[in-house]
Length: 436
Image (cartoon, rainbow, N blue to C red; front, side, top):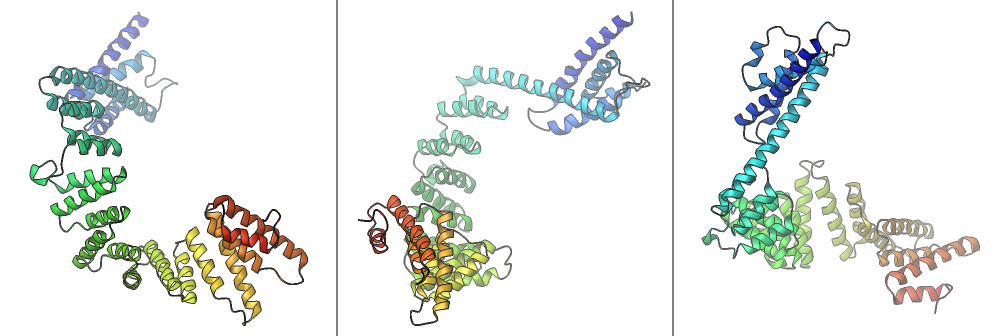
């Protein structure tokens, strides 16, 4: 008899569990508010076990799940007063897992129902059917329906939200010409989303056009000016990038990022003095919060150092490279240029000990540049030349090692840049094995 009662409670409990979940599912749209509902079900299920008055727990859908869970556990022999009684935390975890599984199953069933309804509606009203699928979390099927309905922008937006930018860009292009009067896209957010897709898909010309449209929607969107300028710079339209960045900093003179980008484009336009002025302004504004603008400071210091290098002010350039590195701006190019600047300060008639020290510093910088980018043949070439300069008259053993290493660096240059005349001449000059 007891076995029969336990079997009855087990069956009844298993019936009540999904009923409670189904009632909850009808009260909520799929995917909305499930977290709070699951917490309620779990809490009520854990509290209901072992209680004599279960009726107070049944006021609402979660009560069915609670009662069902209680009956299942009692049927399995778990109840208060026994030595194998589980803790309240275990009950809560068990209730939460059972309720979650029930809700997930309900969610899948709801999706299947929605999919069938949308399929039935698709021929008559594909757009509404697609919206139904999207609401049910079936984004891929929704996008396919939008494409069939030639609603390419809606499909493109879905692909954007899925980070499938190449597909999104292609769909935006299928939508037609970018005519705001035609209302294909009209709001700032729509243009921004389209622009991002083209930018990440590598379609820079179209991305620039999209960001221009965004500026039309919101002429004070500073980020749109930056993104449009960056896109134009990729296609070497430096003049338009310069115009947009100049406009941005005129609207907001303390726009530090805008000045940094303006300095970049001016450098590419060979307007070095104007570029230096922008980098100086970046450094000045960044002093308001050096920790926040550490990256910007590093780049501005590096670009200022490059300016002084071009002006053959090598001591100032070296100081700039050091400051850039101290701010975290450190890469193969900066180390290479820094090493070049150091070698330019050698004085044949000056203190030879100081010259030796500087040569060693330059070689150390070239070594680091090669480590950071082994494929830059120029770093290998200058490292080889620096190693040759390190040789000291009378130190035969040390000189052999330096010569051998220099020869290997020259060979690396030729592997990376076949026929390099400087490497060939260098090998002949120090009698490297295999030199022609």
